Length: 250
Image 1 (tube, one colour):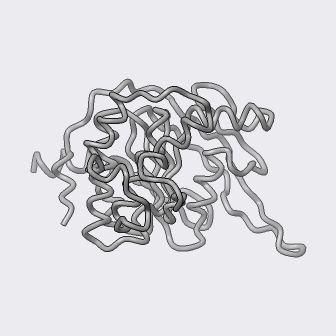
Image 2 (cartoon, one colour; image 1 turned 135 degrees about the horizontal axis):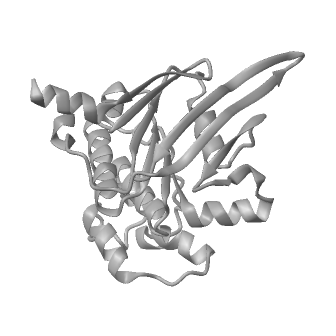
Protein backbone atom coordinates (compact mmCIF):
# COMPACT_ATOMS: atom_id res chain seq x y z
CA UNK A 1 0.00 0.00 0.00
CA UNK A 2 1.26 3.49 -0.85
CA UNK A 3 2.42 5.56 2.11
CA UNK A 4 2.41 9.25 1.08
CA UNK A 5 4.45 10.19 4.17
CA UNK A 6 7.46 8.57 2.49
CA UNK A 7 7.60 11.69 0.35
CA UNK A 8 6.58 14.36 2.86
CA UNK A 9 9.63 16.61 2.42
CA UNK A 10 9.54 19.45 -0.08
CA UNK A 11 12.01 19.14 -2.95
CA UNK A 12 14.41 21.98 -3.63
CA UNK A 13 12.97 23.25 -6.92
CA UNK A 14 12.74 26.71 -8.41
CA UNK A 15 9.22 27.88 -7.57
CA UNK A 16 8.01 30.12 -10.35
CA UNK A 17 4.81 30.54 -12.31
CA UNK A 18 5.72 27.89 -14.85
CA UNK A 19 2.12 27.44 -15.99
CA UNK A 20 -0.56 30.11 -15.66
CA UNK A 21 -4.14 29.23 -16.61
CA UNK A 22 -6.47 32.21 -16.86
CA UNK A 23 -10.21 32.18 -17.46
CA UNK A 24 -10.04 28.83 -19.26
CA UNK A 25 -13.36 27.54 -20.64
CA UNK A 26 -14.33 24.91 -23.18
CA UNK A 27 -17.88 24.69 -24.51
CA UNK A 28 -19.25 21.74 -26.46
CA UNK A 29 -22.46 21.97 -28.45
CA UNK A 30 -25.11 19.25 -28.24
CA UNK A 31 -27.77 20.38 -30.65
CA UNK A 32 -28.71 23.85 -29.48
CA UNK A 33 -27.45 23.21 -25.96
CA UNK A 34 -24.11 24.48 -24.67
CA UNK A 35 -22.23 22.06 -22.41
CA UNK A 36 -19.25 23.31 -20.41
CA UNK A 37 -16.36 20.85 -20.42
CA UNK A 38 -14.28 23.35 -18.46
CA UNK A 39 -15.67 26.54 -16.93
CA UNK A 40 -13.57 29.61 -16.08
CA UNK A 41 -10.57 27.80 -14.58
CA UNK A 42 -7.83 29.96 -13.05
CA UNK A 43 -4.79 28.24 -11.60
CA UNK A 44 -1.00 28.62 -11.30
CA UNK A 45 1.34 25.62 -11.36
CA UNK A 46 4.91 25.89 -10.14
CA UNK A 47 7.79 24.22 -11.94
CA UNK A 48 8.52 20.76 -10.53
CA UNK A 49 5.02 20.24 -9.11
CA UNK A 50 3.78 16.64 -8.82
CA UNK A 51 0.04 17.26 -9.15
CA UNK A 52 -3.11 15.20 -9.52
CA UNK A 53 -6.51 16.07 -10.97
CA UNK A 54 -9.42 14.02 -9.65
CA UNK A 55 -13.16 13.98 -10.22
CA UNK A 56 -15.99 11.72 -11.28
CA UNK A 57 -16.33 10.45 -14.85
CA UNK A 58 -17.36 13.29 -17.17
CA UNK A 59 -16.32 16.01 -14.73
CA UNK A 60 -13.88 17.62 -17.18
CA UNK A 61 -10.55 16.13 -16.06
CA UNK A 62 -9.39 14.93 -19.48
CA UNK A 63 -10.65 18.09 -21.19
CA UNK A 64 -8.57 20.12 -18.74
CA UNK A 65 -5.50 18.01 -19.53
CA UNK A 66 -6.04 18.34 -23.30
CA UNK A 67 -6.36 22.12 -23.02
CA UNK A 68 -3.17 22.40 -20.97
CA UNK A 69 -1.34 20.25 -23.50
CA UNK A 70 -2.61 22.18 -26.50
CA UNK A 71 -4.41 19.13 -27.89
CA UNK A 72 -7.70 21.06 -27.79
CA UNK A 73 -8.33 24.78 -28.20
CA UNK A 74 -10.30 26.63 -25.51
CA UNK A 75 -13.50 28.51 -26.20
CA UNK A 76 -12.07 31.31 -24.07
CA UNK A 77 -9.12 31.89 -21.78
CA UNK A 78 -5.41 31.23 -22.05
CA UNK A 79 -2.73 28.74 -21.00
CA UNK A 80 0.68 30.35 -20.49
CA UNK A 81 4.00 28.49 -20.32
CA UNK A 82 6.73 30.77 -18.95
CA UNK A 83 4.64 33.74 -20.03
CA UNK A 84 3.85 32.49 -23.54
CA UNK A 85 0.27 31.71 -24.54
CA UNK A 86 0.34 28.34 -26.30
CA UNK A 87 -3.05 28.85 -27.90
CA UNK A 88 -1.70 31.83 -29.82
CA UNK A 89 0.79 29.58 -31.59
CA UNK A 90 0.21 28.60 -35.20
CA UNK A 91 -0.24 24.87 -35.84
CA UNK A 92 3.42 24.19 -36.71
CA UNK A 93 4.64 26.26 -33.77
CA UNK A 94 2.31 24.43 -31.39
CA UNK A 95 3.41 21.02 -32.70
CA UNK A 96 7.05 21.99 -32.25
CA UNK A 97 6.35 23.31 -28.75
CA UNK A 98 4.58 20.11 -27.69
CA UNK A 99 7.36 17.92 -29.10
CA UNK A 100 10.02 19.90 -27.26
CA UNK A 101 8.35 20.61 -23.95
CA UNK A 102 5.57 18.09 -23.21
CA UNK A 103 5.56 14.33 -22.71
CA UNK A 104 2.35 12.29 -22.67
CA UNK A 105 1.39 9.11 -20.81
CA UNK A 106 -2.02 7.55 -21.44
CA UNK A 107 -4.14 4.77 -19.99
CA UNK A 108 -3.51 2.81 -23.18
CA UNK A 109 0.23 2.35 -23.65
CA UNK A 110 0.29 3.11 -27.41
CA UNK A 111 3.48 1.13 -27.98
CA UNK A 112 4.28 0.01 -31.52
CA UNK A 113 4.17 -3.78 -31.45
CA UNK A 114 6.77 -4.17 -34.21
CA UNK A 115 9.38 -2.16 -32.29
CA UNK A 116 11.49 -3.30 -29.35
CA UNK A 117 11.38 -1.61 -25.96
CA UNK A 118 14.41 0.53 -26.77
CA UNK A 119 13.10 1.43 -30.22
CA UNK A 120 9.76 2.49 -28.72
CA UNK A 121 11.51 4.65 -26.13
CA UNK A 122 13.70 6.30 -28.77
CA UNK A 123 10.81 6.96 -31.15
CA UNK A 124 10.30 10.65 -30.18
CA UNK A 125 14.01 11.27 -30.77
CA UNK A 126 13.86 9.54 -34.15
CA UNK A 127 10.81 11.56 -35.20
CA UNK A 128 12.49 14.79 -34.09
CA UNK A 129 15.80 13.72 -35.64
CA UNK A 130 17.58 14.21 -32.35
CA UNK A 131 20.74 12.49 -31.17
CA UNK A 132 20.57 9.78 -28.51
CA UNK A 133 21.88 10.66 -25.06
CA UNK A 134 23.12 7.24 -24.01
CA UNK A 135 23.99 8.27 -20.46
CA UNK A 136 20.50 9.67 -19.82
CA UNK A 137 18.97 6.68 -21.60
CA UNK A 138 20.81 4.29 -19.29
CA UNK A 139 19.69 6.28 -16.26
CA UNK A 140 16.05 6.03 -17.34
CA UNK A 141 16.27 2.32 -18.11
CA UNK A 142 17.89 1.63 -14.75
CA UNK A 143 15.41 3.75 -12.81
CA UNK A 144 12.39 2.13 -14.49
CA UNK A 145 13.76 -1.41 -14.24
CA UNK A 146 13.98 -1.94 -18.00
CA UNK A 147 17.70 -2.52 -18.55
CA UNK A 148 17.16 -6.24 -19.15
CA UNK A 149 14.12 -5.69 -21.38
CA UNK A 150 15.49 -3.43 -24.12
CA UNK A 151 15.31 -6.12 -26.83
CA UNK A 152 11.85 -7.35 -25.82
CA UNK A 153 8.70 -6.55 -27.78
CA UNK A 154 5.53 -5.16 -26.17
CA UNK A 155 3.77 -8.53 -26.45
CA UNK A 156 6.46 -10.01 -24.18
CA UNK A 157 5.83 -7.49 -21.39
CA UNK A 158 3.30 -7.22 -18.58
CA UNK A 159 0.94 -4.25 -18.43
CA UNK A 160 3.05 -2.56 -15.77
CA UNK A 161 6.22 -3.03 -17.81
CA UNK A 162 4.54 -1.60 -20.91
CA UNK A 163 3.48 1.47 -18.95
CA UNK A 164 7.04 1.91 -17.72
CA UNK A 165 8.18 1.89 -21.35
CA UNK A 166 5.55 4.55 -22.09
CA UNK A 167 6.87 6.68 -19.21
CA UNK A 168 10.46 6.33 -20.46
CA UNK A 169 9.30 7.31 -23.96
CA UNK A 170 7.60 10.42 -22.52
CA UNK A 171 10.77 11.36 -20.63
CA UNK A 172 13.36 10.62 -23.32
CA UNK A 173 13.26 14.14 -24.82
CA UNK A 174 13.67 15.72 -21.36
CA UNK A 175 10.35 17.60 -21.51
CA UNK A 176 9.40 20.25 -18.97
CA UNK A 177 5.92 18.83 -18.41
CA UNK A 178 4.45 15.33 -18.25
CA UNK A 179 0.69 14.98 -18.78
CA UNK A 180 -0.64 11.59 -17.65
CA UNK A 181 -4.27 10.60 -18.29
CA UNK A 182 -5.32 7.69 -16.02
CA UNK A 183 -1.83 6.09 -16.22
CA UNK A 184 -2.77 3.34 -13.74
CA UNK A 185 -6.29 2.75 -15.07
CA UNK A 186 -5.50 -0.54 -16.81
CA UNK A 187 -3.27 -1.92 -14.07
CA UNK A 188 -3.84 -3.98 -10.95
CA UNK A 189 -3.25 -2.26 -7.61
CA UNK A 190 0.32 -3.46 -7.14
CA UNK A 191 1.38 -2.43 -10.65
CA UNK A 192 -0.45 0.89 -10.28
CA UNK A 193 1.36 1.64 -7.03
CA UNK A 194 4.69 0.86 -8.71
CA UNK A 195 3.92 3.18 -11.62
CA UNK A 196 3.09 6.14 -9.39
CA UNK A 197 6.28 5.48 -7.40
CA UNK A 198 8.31 5.48 -10.63
CA UNK A 199 6.68 8.75 -11.69
CA UNK A 200 7.41 10.36 -8.32
CA UNK A 201 11.03 9.26 -8.47
CA UNK A 202 11.52 10.69 -11.97
CA UNK A 203 9.91 13.92 -10.77
CA UNK A 204 12.37 14.04 -7.88
CA UNK A 205 15.44 13.23 -9.97
CA UNK A 206 14.74 15.09 -13.20
CA UNK A 207 12.44 17.90 -12.03
CA UNK A 208 9.68 17.55 -14.60
CA UNK A 209 6.28 18.96 -13.71
CA UNK A 210 3.59 16.26 -13.60
CA UNK A 211 -0.16 16.66 -14.02
CA UNK A 212 -1.82 13.29 -13.44
CA UNK A 213 -5.51 12.72 -14.11
CA UNK A 214 -6.89 9.87 -12.03
CA UNK A 215 -10.15 8.59 -10.56
CA UNK A 216 -8.14 6.76 -7.88
CA UNK A 217 -8.11 8.77 -4.64
CA UNK A 218 -5.23 6.74 -3.21
CA UNK A 219 -3.08 7.55 -6.24
CA UNK A 220 -4.07 11.23 -5.99
CA UNK A 221 -3.18 11.33 -2.29
CA UNK A 222 0.35 10.26 -3.21
CA UNK A 223 0.94 13.48 -5.16
CA UNK A 224 2.00 16.86 -3.76
CA UNK A 225 -1.02 18.85 -4.88
CA UNK A 226 -4.54 17.63 -5.54
CA UNK A 227 -7.23 19.54 -7.41
CA UNK A 228 -10.79 18.30 -7.75
CA UNK A 229 -12.87 19.13 -10.81
CA UNK A 230 -16.65 18.83 -10.90
CA UNK A 231 -18.89 20.01 -13.74
CA UNK A 232 -15.86 21.65 -15.33
CA UNK A 233 -14.97 23.77 -12.30
CA UNK A 234 -12.20 23.44 -9.72
CA UNK A 235 -13.99 22.87 -6.43
CA UNK A 236 -10.99 21.94 -4.28
CA UNK A 237 -7.24 22.64 -4.38
CA UNK A 238 -5.18 21.00 -1.64
CA UNK A 239 -1.45 21.34 -0.91
CA UNK A 240 -0.82 17.78 0.25
CA UNK A 241 2.74 18.59 1.31
CA UNK A 242 1.35 20.99 3.92
CA UNK A 243 -1.17 18.35 5.02
CA UNK A 244 1.58 15.74 5.49
CA UNK A 245 3.90 18.15 7.28
CA UNK A 246 1.12 19.04 9.71
CA UNK A 247 0.45 15.33 10.29
CA UNK A 248 4.14 14.76 11.07
CA UNK A 249 4.13 17.69 13.53
CA UNK A 250 1.05 16.30 15.28
